[in-house]
Image (cartoon, rainbow, N blue to C red; front, side, top):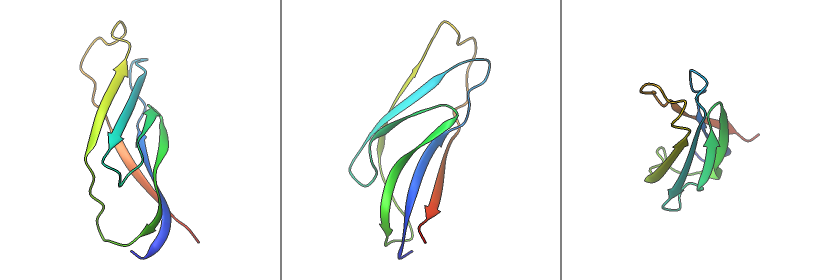
Length: 84
């Protein structure tokens, strides 16, 4: 709290050769964006003034249904880097 930093949202790699892409829209606290499985993208940069950050995200998922043979678990994660 009361420190500057960057918040990233990531998506762990998919299994069985399935490629996933997630795009989202937000209400303005976080940046809208896109992430592919196995990578991360910036969703917030600035001063953190509160102990919690709440946001609603409208998520859109894209994959190739021809290679999707069974249910897949999606594992999103967040990483925060504190600025010096």
